[in-house]
Image (cartoon, rainbow, N blue to C red; front, side, top):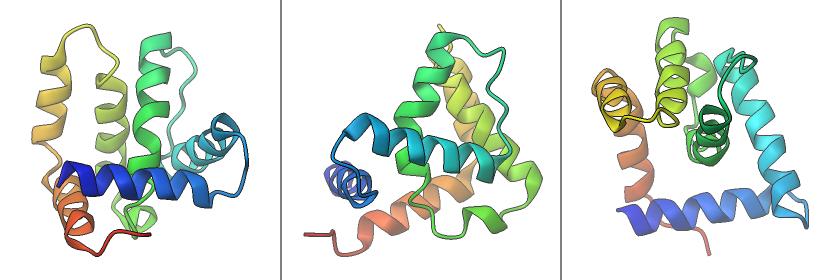
Length: 114
């Protein structure tokens, strides 16, 4: 299922409509931060990079903006935790988000874009 999600993620970035990947990703990051209510000021560089790397995948979740605020905060914490020195922070945050991982699993089952 990871290759299917990776393909979907890559297509999503391309669909953002900018020839420069970093510009397309930054647009997605801005949108995801707004959707999640994430304030990234004061985050470490590694935390910001982790958010940037995972935001395109999270942006694929179709109804993310309608998720309860508390759950969206947990998604923000998950993305931030990916940038922590210890992976256990990410694992603990992931354990609190079965809804996110179910949404990603559902996406992986859909027919991938061409």
